[in-house]
Length: 487
Image 1 (cartoon, rainbow, N blue to C red):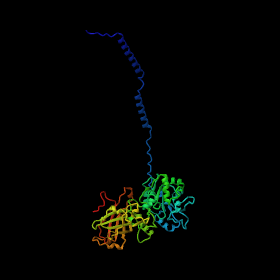
Image 2 (image 1 turned 180 degrees about the vertical axis):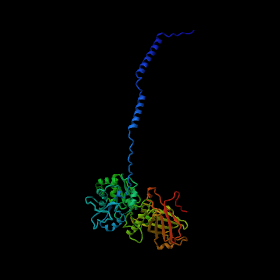
Image 3 (image 1 turned 135 degrees about the horizontal axis):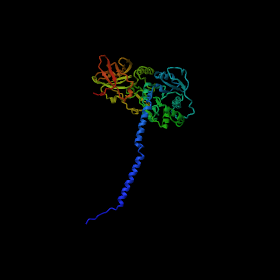
Image 4 (image 1 turned 45 degrees about the horizontal axis):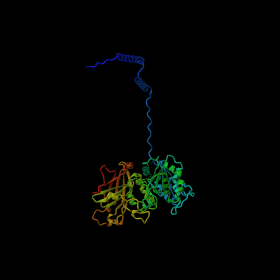
């Protein structure tokens, strides 16, 4: 049986009424807003208008002036403070004259008291007398209170008001600087930051007694201008806190420690706390620019058979030709005669019988003694090798006699002459004798940008020659696949 459903009349009437009401409302809104643009159309219209206005009214862009690249650090940006003694001034001023460039460099020599003819020499920096330091305490029984005067030289130099300074450089009157190499080293660093740059002693015991983190003043050190300003403000108070310290450089180091600035080490600054001959050290110089030589009155002249000033004058010849390369070591082999050849450019060439590894050759031979004369070979702060007592293994040394520059070939030619030693002919080995070589010619192209690249030794090559008693060597940048082979 089917059930039948019926819909009451009131329900359809309600639905129809609702539809009619909605239709009327839609019609009303359509009529009311038919003349008003939609928001999206309005935004589009505004954007188009702005675009048109910009096209019509915006002037062409003015090119911004090119900013000049920052000026490279040069000698003018350095100011030297040189510690000197009135008692030794007549002798030591001759060292300064050899490296000072009056028209290019700025600085002051600080003496403990006035000297005769102390000023007016145009080949030297101006001379000034250090301030009185009698109010400062000094309690070290082994030292001298002049250390207080010397430690204040950077601050006193800063107060002279030099303009456009980037670096203050400290050195002694028996320090020989290579100014262009000093610039090369300092150019690597941001002079607007706090930098304290130098090196430690060659003597392990010196570094133990003082600090491996201290820059030794005789070897020279550099302080950036903003750091020097801060140091000058606090240094006198700092010095008063350390009356028991020995020297000037450890007082500087103590103040740097209070300022929180560590030493940035550069191996080209040389304190040379040694005695004897520097041959072993200079013939195996680190792969870094030679910046300074100290203790010139203590060590032997770097060239034999001449005094110290004459020896430094000779060194100036290669410095003027190619300062970046001075003392840089290259090692190669004369394979036909089984010889090892070491070239310290601008200084010495050494020939050894037999084949020695480069690793051994780059270690300084102990031609020098420690600052503490009772210390043995373990008393140095670097690796060394003994000087052989066997007559057949002693090197033949050829010292620089002259160097010239060939402008047409852009090449230097340097000559090295044998320094004869009587015992060198005692060898009975049945192999070619280097004593027959009387002179060595070395050809090299100057490379002023040598230290703008990653450090690497130059390569040397023994060249064939018909010249009697002469060895000819080419030194230059190593080829892409070139290396030093033992065999």
